[in-house]
Image 1 (cartoon, helix red, strand yellow):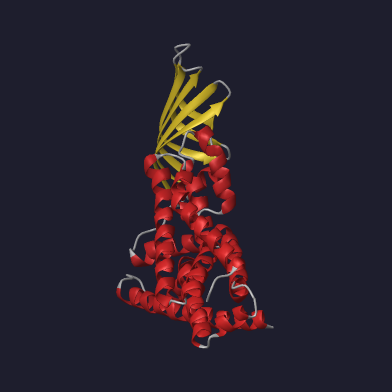
Image 2: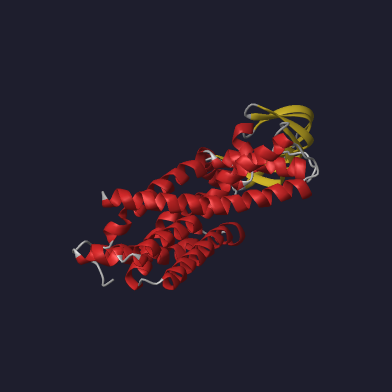
Length: 351
């Protein structure tokens, strides 16, 4: 009965906090579409708002959870309910268990949405911003990209100067065929077209360096299919979980940086789990010291570690080129704080 009452109070506080923050976001997006967008229409406005709010909620939910928990425990402190309940020998964890459970469900929902739903939302938002805000046509392009297609002892190093994946066209194509480190042949072409798992090249210039032969004319060579190469042309935040895993598995064989895809997985997991981590850490500070200031300090510090970790994951993978797990070091401290909070809340302390 008590925990249902606490859960109802928290959901009300959570809903109010969400409404205020997301309402502020709607006002900002409204002014943005009115003042910044080059092309305006009511349909695009509503589409832009409806796509933006769920994505914004993913990023704002740790703050919403923090504010809602502070409102709830402030309600307890003002009425001395926390001291009354603990005086009967009830551990403090019982006061926030419904909140932790709610945050766990929210985090699980975020994990699913961030890997399966939000990528398509972000892709649509990107298209709207590019076409209606900047007045440019949205295309899936690959620029100046090298691949290493490995097949046993043979490796084909491929370079594409420019590829329009949406049209299935590649320009400035160069293929270098090697075996056991020795160059066997080269192929150059100004233009090529995708045809299933191959490239059709109408004007290929093929030179066999082993036999000394040369060929100029149409050719069809084995290559990645459009479905495999499409994620490489997409922004990381537009790729679903299945595509991330697929590209991560192919990355080493293709000779591209696979750490960038692992980093995106880690970033989405951390973003999704942060509401759960936030309420667990802040709950201890608020209940132990009965101080909203101390709760705010813990919440702000946790949020700073969260942001630092998100940035370090991205930097280590994309700029330094090392395993992004190193970027989780600040998250390790967050985890230690969570475990300490759970221990103290279960064990009890003077309130």
